[in-house]
Length: 83
Image (cartoon, rainbow, N blue to C red; front, side, top):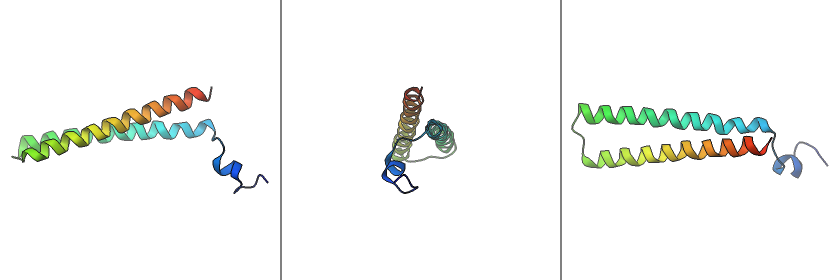
């Protein structure tokens, strides 16, 4: 049975059109990275913030950088395997 709820339709391979999802996620990750970077630097420059804020800022930046890189790699792997 090949209906809309069959195992083939739920767990089978997706079309190449879904690769663009990884592209949009990587763009979103890069935008969030720069938003956090600029707002964090502005907060540090304008106010006295505790040292723990700087460490938290660094960790959030690392997380968004890894998120960006991961989705960029997944987009390249997805689009490359669909050729």
